[in-house]
Image (cartoon, rainbow, N blue to C red; front, top):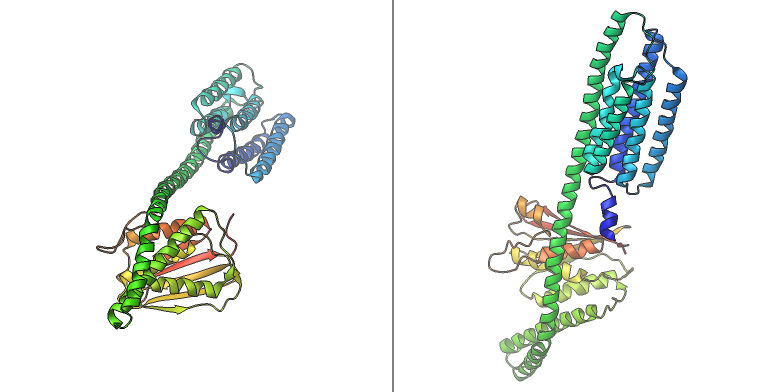
Length: 418
């Protein structure tokens, strides 16, 4: 069903692009015909059938207005609709040529313009149909037409040559305009498709990673509980030994943090919605929990005094911690964590004094899996963070810091898309 529906849509460009360019060509032709009729009738004294030709131009103008109104709807165009537009333009052009000399009119070759447009935009069967119609009109105009009343043959010959020259200029301009615009739009569409394929491949990798993470979480629950219990017993046993006791307490806290992460994974699997809490308290808790996981790292914080209720989107805490981990791994100095709020979004800046990213890495950050940390990290942190923020309408940007290092900015709208 969907394949059949897709086959009826234009395979090149959306309606606004195709019909918009065709509308521009139509308006140009209407203007050209109007100027030509005025020039011949009043400038050269060649009597033209003004009533029928004016009626055709008025009808084409009304058709152009209806096309402009249709473009405002911004709905997809079908092959048949676009073909109907081209047939209407071709027929109107043939009628104008009929009243102005038929095949002897030097502008008769402009009937090729709709065929060229069809060749770029439509399937071959419709292109051949339009070409056949254009050929039939041309053959008919060889025998059936209203001749122009030109008494002087020398003036007629000069007018014919001048018309051919002007016709060539118009044809070249119209074809160049439409073809170049079409090619530019096609290149833009191809780029959008390439970006979409890249996003789909990245999402597939992330989904596969999420499946493996769920399996690992299920397997890790029992050994983590054992580690936590053992660490607690060892901390009690070596309470009088400050070195061993402190290490055992640290081990117990790390095991508790891992267990909390597994609990969160299980809650997401059950589609449990996060509870609302004050923004400043949530940010402080995120930094505190990260500090438990990274006791060796140093961090300075600047948190907003924002007490509004905040429901953290799924995965946001992990996204922030991924960036914090990257910054702590890269920076010998303390990581700087700053958060600000405005009427539209929450903005979080995480800065480090590490070596930074190359221009290529900044362009690919969050879109491909890579790691700039020798010997540690699998290169998935930024990709996961980017995917999480993209899902809730946020963004992640990387900039260089004055004096060295990188600043990662996370922007999250207050009203993410549904």
